[in-house]
Amino acid sequence: MAFNGIIARKFALLDEYQTQLRKELDGVTFAYFRRNWALRCATERALQVMAEIVVDVAERIIAMRDAGPVATAAAAIEKLVTLGVLKRAQPYVSIVRFRNLIVHQYEQVDPALVYSIATRHLDDFTKFRNEIDACA
Image (cartoon, rainbow, N blue to C red):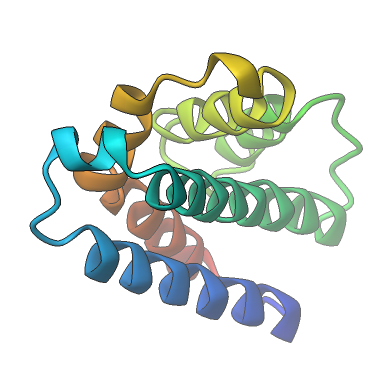
């Protein structure tokens, strides 16, 4: 099944955000990250947008396959596993949970968690895109 241009545009934006985050955080220590309010906020926002793209793409594929609706974003990820689009739900459900934390419990976001995701787990977004591309 070929995916439409909307998914391609979302993945182009995902790639752009990933590239920019890597550039902005290159050589940045956690101590500096924790002190730099603007960098922390920008990183949180970039990760939120990237997570929203994961959710949007999942929900779009479910709709294109007439396999929905689903009740939650995590359920959308699980549905893609059921449909054979994704091999497994992790780490993508963790991406969704992080997005929920940023959106709904923003006063509790731990800078160490944000830094860890932005410096150690950006490849999870690439893996998502690659799995979706392999199914297209």
